[in-house]
Image (cartoon, rainbow, N blue to C red; front, side, top):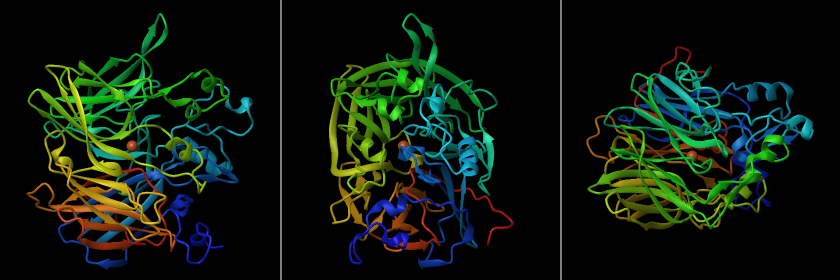
Length: 492
Ligand SMILES: [Fe+2]
């Protein structure tokens, strides 16, 4: 049976999203020559994406979507056309498992076959599969469970694990959701870790890092935490970094260390634990205020800004963590890839009050916006969302939402599944939404992927579709830069 037919029962059944989880083992580099519509002349730059490129190795399937090996893609918008490239990050896990064609490393939700003997005291590997960033002359592949991996931005070849000249020390990790602060150009990131030993054992903390525009990690601090935090993303204003630690918590980690259980097994949603909102001053990198709010979890954040005494934060709220069941068994057709709900939080730094309100009812994830507006009030956010069109096993629509919550939804045709939308400014743009929304879409009917491009100011205006010669496994996050990285051997 062809892969395009594997995920539908009959010839007329709409395919679900799972074909888009199958491996792309091959690495490509070519000029895209199958284009519907015209690529805008004022769209120039490089669109990088990262995500797990394979969920299976040999006869095995990884125990969690998060454990697939990181595969970078780049779409380079040049005068001569749009160049596509994909390449795996050569981590030890990728190299070992490609050679052995078998699971060789533990993961977030994966055990090495062979029981305790194979897993005892073995730390999970870093698959470098979650996000990517171009800053300070470094292209990084990022995963919160490890250090960055540096890549060549033109060829996507792996340079090696990256530590900012040893400034990321020992076991310190670096999140996938660092942000560039527009006022300074600094890249601000964090990692959950420990800051020494106390009477109760290791002292949990958040390490906070600032990297200047030249790519030097010049400032760092540790913010003490009561427990080891489950913290995937944060919000950034002009003055503050804001972290939400929620009701998703790590249970007993001893079985994980001993090798009998995975981290995913021990991550729990505890509705009795309220959300903590921790505000950190960007100059001192120290906590200045802490708020408590109703239980729940924030996975991804939109924009944030300072508004007088208040700090305003947009983000995607989850009332449970049931999605983790699906993520551990991604090929199970009964599992659903759910999103969150778009909320806004207003924290008053003077009175200590916090208010939350729902911005939009539509199930949404991956909020993005014009990143030049990071930390100041912006007028529009874009999300991947799920609507009930008879084929909603994954994100199947894009929404443009104004600050006041007015939404415009563009549905993909049944059987096509989207991903994180990305804003790319038009060359010479003067308005916030003068630009394009780039979205990689998996076509379940043909088992190929395509890059769809929409006007950012009128999302219903579809501009063009760039059809790839193969599929791209569903990815997590990406990054757009107006820089180009030409290669001599570009067109294959
Ligand atoms: Fe993420």
